[in-house]
Length: 123
Image (tube, rainbow, N blue to C red; front, side, top):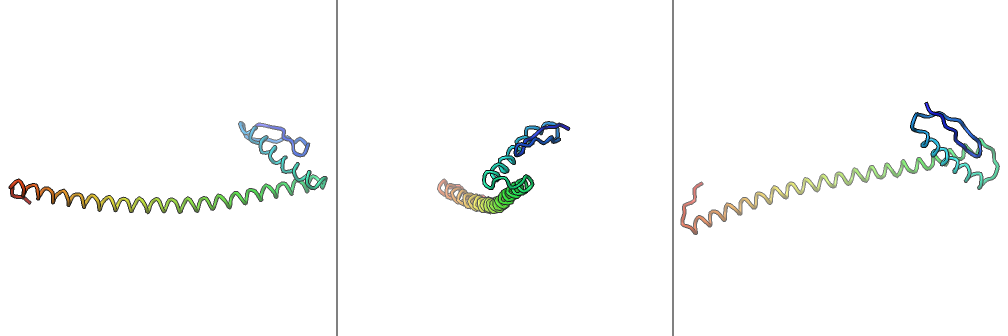
């Protein structure tokens, strides 16, 4: 287990994390510190605990908004997949119809060619 020291609102906190996750934890702490600093700049000294709770709520609000957007994207992806699948099914049906029509035309052309050449058509 790795250990890192992060700083939130000018105070150092020693934290444990999985090996290789040190930079990620430091980055997360830095982002959270920006929330705390923003609130401190906006409201002044209102107490460490209150600042931390308010910053946590801001982070959770951002997370909830991102989850809502992601759900919207997932719905849109589902709609796009259905539209794609419907289009592919329709294209397959069109291909089959076109292939059938072309086969019919080819047979008719062969019959006409045989008649013009004076050859009897064998079925």
